[in-house]
Length: 484
Figure 1 (tube, helix red, strand yellow):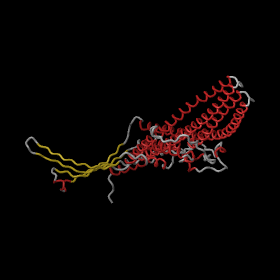
Figure 2 (figure 1 turned 90 degrees about the horizontal axis):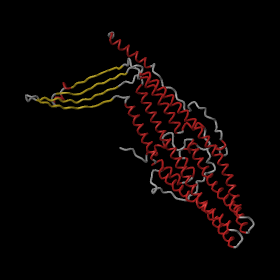
Figure 3 (figure 1 turned 135 degrees about the vertical axis):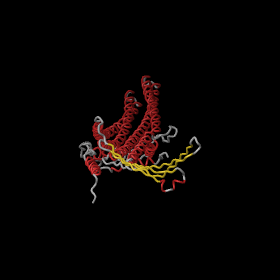
Figure 4 (figure 1 turned 90 degrees about the vertical axis):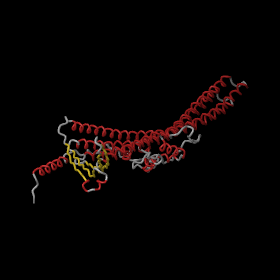
């Protein structure tokens, strides 16, 4: 057997040493889905989110608005997810990040190109010469130390984070549509209450005027009654303005003009079923869109550390070409026209003033920032859910008390009117009871809307409104085709 030459042995030894050096490159730091936050076994206000000890189905989070049983609300949310400008922008950003991830992944393989050229030149003496060439060029950079692979992984994780970002926008838009819709229906209910009380106060004013004409009361009673009518009348334009502006906001959220918004007026506030209150384990928060995006950014930052560290080691490049070259076009078919070349290169950083190590430190600092942001996202999610549960519990109790108060105020206003007509009570009693009736009825309408809004905020806090597996984003994306 022929022994290898000394230069070949040295080259082999050098490659072996470089391969061993590759084992010394950094590995990606681990990621933790909970960012080191100890998730509770149950919520501190679990009683507010459980009905008869029966937890709700977590699968209902993706399209939670359907649980309200309001076809108009469902239509508005679906229109917003399909046409909202913020959603469209986030969807375009996702396409961009996925395309950039494909660009990064393409660098892992070889590149091949083709070329053809023809040249004709004439000398001063009149003779002419030609040159023809066709061929293929190929190059490849072996990713021995994993720099390109780590960069590709980072780009892929960033693209996944972009999908979660799209989900976060969808969650916010769906919740905002629902909250504005509840505001609209609440304002319409309060307008109806105001108009009903206005009619009642006008009847009271008529009674007071009759009693003044009969000499049974003074003009003070009629003036007080007229003041009450005007005060109630003054509230009507403000409610009408709120209704109109809320409709404008819903048109904006659904990506259409006010004239294009088809929204029936006067529909009742969505009545929530008795088992709508939810109970989800805290582990569900890992699938919240913003938490998921923060976790993926931690993974991308970890891969950037690996890529930066691998850049400190040698890089290799293999290239070659194969083609035909001749002085005439017909000469390209001869065997002598074939030519080829092969090139192997290595680049080794020797001195860069510490730039490569500083880049690694910078990526490690960026990783620490991403971890801190991830932890903040988890803690914020826990706070949002606890806040929503506390509000849900408090508003449910408040609504019960206000409804009882409204019933009592209605009875008191009726009795006061009857007794005033009989001269058994003074007019101030009538005014007080009617004013109390209007206030309590408005409070019931507001508390009813607040309770419904608490459910919306709870769904949003739990991350409802998107599908972590990308189904929600895909469904929305079908409505807006990618540009060719």
